[in-house]
Length: 259
Image 1 (spheres, helix red, strand yellow):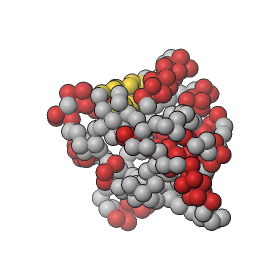
Image 2 (cartoon, rainbow, N blue to C red):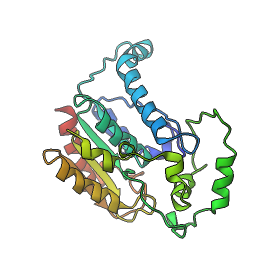
Image 3 (cartoon, rainbow, N blue to C red):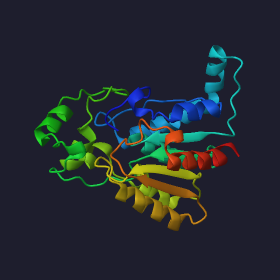
């Protein structure tokens, strides 16, 4: 939630391009306010605002660009990776049941998981607390930040957790994390999660715990976790024709999405 921009190509997995093409789909990619300049509640507000725009203004906008294209709002797939996976899950947990046909997410943030200052994400040390403190102290009141091109600020979310400032910046509340928000959920769109077993950014154990909890809270919900060896972002250059597991997963997603 501290870096990224919607159109950053390195965070758009290769298989998504043909997946969208053969299903005659379009991708709508929103930005949102980033931490530490903003809070978790700010991001949730942006998500809500986006869906208002999505339903009320997207058709008019698209008609002004490509008037021959008609949108089918009965077949919406929500997707995201890492912090975007948090956004996708928050979308399914906050929007009306009829909004989404399916959810496909990669290595999502599901909780405010603890991080040791000695942890080595991607094998590199976390920058010192002083660097984080300087960043936060330099924030000017009223600053609005919705886009940062990686690798700038890649370490900030990890620093907030490792140096004990996450709750202060992001906020605390049951609604802020999917693993607690799901406790009050009445439904969940069919959800498919991809996660690398060697992820040092968002450890897969938290996703496993979220999936098990969801199955208990919502026994009728369809939620599937597929793990493969690999780090955070391990699937970025994969194509479904080269990966049997991915081909099988995308076929399942299609069946729910386009039914």
